[in-house]
Image (cartoon, one colour):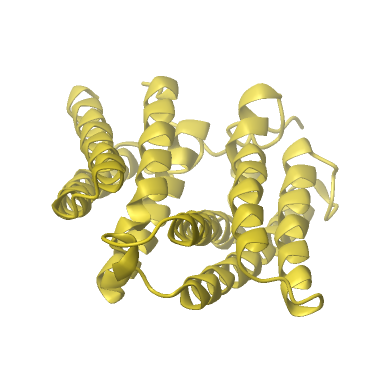
Amino acid sequence: MKNEMMLFWVVVGLYGLSASSYIFGLISKHEKLFSVGLYSAIAGFIPHVLVIAVRWMATGVSPFITISESITFGIFCAVLIFLSFEFSNKKVRPLGVLVMPVAFVLMGWAGALYKDAASQLVPALQSGWIWAHIIGAATGFGAVLTAAGLGLLYLLKEKYSGGVYERLPDLQTIDNLSYRFVAGGFILYGLMIVTGAFWADQVKGSYWNWDPVEVWSLISWLTYGIYLHLRITFGWRGKRLAVYALVALIAMIISYWGIPFTVETFHSGFRIEH
């Protein structure tokens, strides 16, 4: 447990260094700090993988049962998507200015919630649907977080010029990239809801139980559905959708982790009464 927690706080520290580097790099327009931020994120991602692996081997249970484990796995997927995108498109290097601070804060929160006791999944909840459900949720979060980061870059590039902002993709490209990530997140979030419904039917005998997390997940999914509708049907582009992506991210975080933390629900460590 001691080594596990030491690894965990190494992750938090390196993600904090990454977040600070991105923020100060953008403020000072010192682009070398973006490289510091990127390589700090990579350095943090390695022990992040180890934290999940160590927990999994120690408990023998899927590493996303408690809220802390769920956050840890969700941020793992988000940082993986972020790093993959960073290396495939070097023009969006400042993207970490939103992604890494969110990763740092949520990982710090996960550390505060971390429990010594091994997570357990009661036999009634053991199902193949859990993997599709959780992976859909976690990768969907990573996609919409990236979309929100691109939205922030759009707003900054629109307001400022020269230096860092001159080397960003043009506004239309940023807008299109954000749209693609939102579309991907919408599909993955839909996968989460559908597989969760089948899983609930196996456990409770009904596809929908009006659990607060279910309701908020549906709200956040519809929120991104509205984004797509506004763009495709009404032709919204640019600044309005960039702001929308940032606001929608808040609803998503509330549904994924906020509600299980504040309200006793089926999703609070996957507890269930029989």
